[in-house]
Image (cartoon, rainbow, N blue to C red; front, side, top):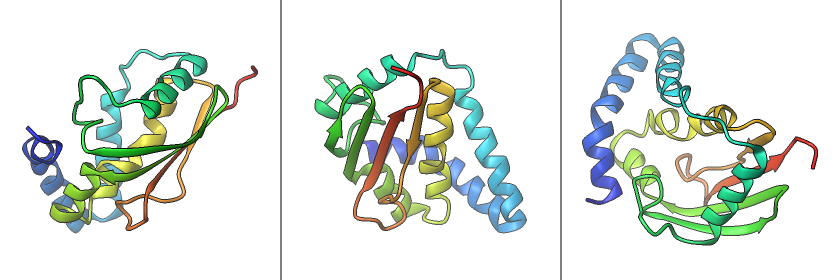
Length: 151
């Protein structure tokens, strides 16, 4: 099964619900959908900033042996990276392709908007920034991680 097919199977109904809720209730519905989706990550075990950066750097340097819906269909270029700072560009993303084709009004909400708070729930001492996304018609998605804890 491709990532696009997986997204359609497991995220299409959610996208339709989000579209309808936003159409009826506007920004308030966006916040409700966002909070509900963020709740999925709330139970994850935290890792150290050092471990997080090591795992991210390894992820952006190699293709996972066992691809999944979060890694398959991505073309990632590591721009620079070390234990304190990582910048990577995603130039192809099946999530962006799926949502732009099927649910453009809620794609960013259901995928991209959750990255920063999810990373904050996962680890302390690392911040995430992004200046552009494929979902919003950028030329790439930028993933910029930097450590805020002392070395």
